[in-house]
Image (cartoon, rainbow, N blue to C red):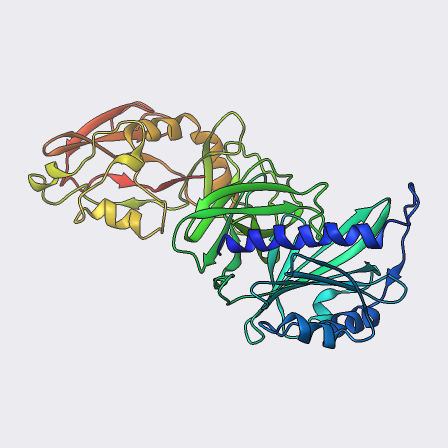
Length: 430
């Protein structure tokens, strides 16, 4: 978008100020209601003007037969009015060549829509309080805005060529409102796209529980972007429907995408022993939660027996498996039978660290109670951890309500990695 658009708006407003002297001088101070014009009257008024770019002042005067010439300034400006002085049409020239037209008329009725009248024109955005339209086939840019004088509202519609020796080309800019993702009870990730720009510009999103996104209550968040962009929103209310609309600001003009919607999730707080994510379609049992209960870890319903940590102990030393508290940081060898079994559970699942197996054991009674109630077997035995002890050895933990295999409950030891006498399970964070 070119900065000429901003200059166009300033020019059109300056013409409008001249029109005030003639259209509003007889209004009484304090008057709050003015005449109202409907769509048919607006269309007739617009059709009475000329947008034949490049014609001379004399041809404009001939075109305006039936209107009175109100003023002429510096040989480059003409203003006409109808007999009742309720409509004013102004023209700006350069070297006796028309390049801008402005129409001042009563405020449009509330049900009037300029977009219906401007057939063939596309709404492209806002410049401050000005609506901007364009029609490439007619080589015309339109700026429409409301103004007030002595308590009376007026409607102004200005026409300017898109291509001329004075105005440069209007670049096509398109903003797309993308889908909502990662929808949680108080946050969401909203995506968008902007095309028609060659460098990063200011983008943003309006969002509100009101589908009309009123300026009085809607919230906004901005970023700088080129092409695809994502904006994170927090502080939302659970189980609430929100409406959102992406926009971009270029040379003070606002470009908008479509309005879409999403509904936040329920705020669920888990306890140890709960089925996750719910009892209808569970994928595991909660064995650890943070203080809020909104985050934690689950253990798989199943376990496997007789799997080696690694069948090739010497080469597995290259794996990064030294974390004793967070198994997600331990990258087990690709050829590990345990790692392969865990990977079959899907994205996010991993082999627990030594410390995570100790935590599972601490809450084992609640976990196993839930497993038993759903017909699953209990977790019980010596379980491989993902934590490496030495070049050819890894830690295991006794997961049991009592002693098992000579090891006390929750205690750990180490064994050669090709030992097939241990069990394994999978865990996942939420």
